[in-house]
Image 1 (cartoon, rainbow, N blue to C red):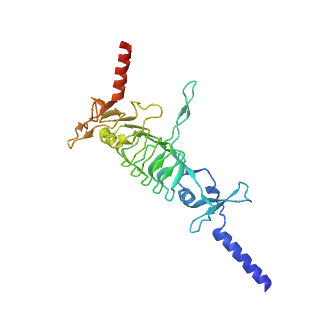
Image 2: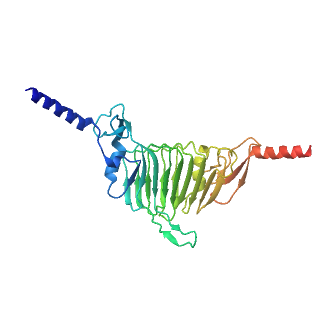
Image 3: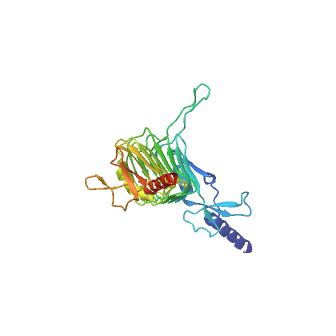
Length: 310
């Protein structure tokens, strides 16, 4: 009878360990989730449910915990990953459940040539993803959202992404036409977008240090910059940097350092009334844009001239 009780107790302990104890998943014990065409479900599971818990017995001081359907112990912490892909991946990449990432880095293989005779050492291989969906991603820290050498992409969905600690850098040179939308993005350090881009939406952006857009499509630079200009902050140490916002497309180009004029219903830019001498405006070709020069610069020029005369 006593033996039966001990066995029953042991069975309960083992059952508890299986239900709530550490789950050793080699695929989850990595710094970067590197997706390919066969491992998306497994790695997406890691992104959503993998936690690590302090352990005095584990070699690295932590045990893995799979939170799928389980109550997470209070001492456990969600694992944070970088997100990447193998260059051979193609088709769709859909990673639900990933709410925070250290970085998102999706890139094909660059071509490398010999410095001596310029012969090809490594042939370039573009990443052939057609769509990228990170539907639950909210924060990228401390890294960037970086997509490069991707020639087939027609859709990028990050509907909940609010902040990127460093850069939003997307280069889709040679790819099909695309529209980019970041409906929740509020904070990013630098923005660089290149490719056949016809439309960009960042309706709630309120902090960015620099924005560069180089489109081979029909992007309306004036309409885009009109909405994001107020979000930009002076480049650190260069409060009068003339290239703080740059946009070019088939419809023209625009460079500005201050909020640009608003458009009338006919699309003609109109400059809001200001109190002289706060600014002057010089029109430039393309996008019905304007380059606004800070009036303080003019005042400084006059002051220097006065000092020379005196």
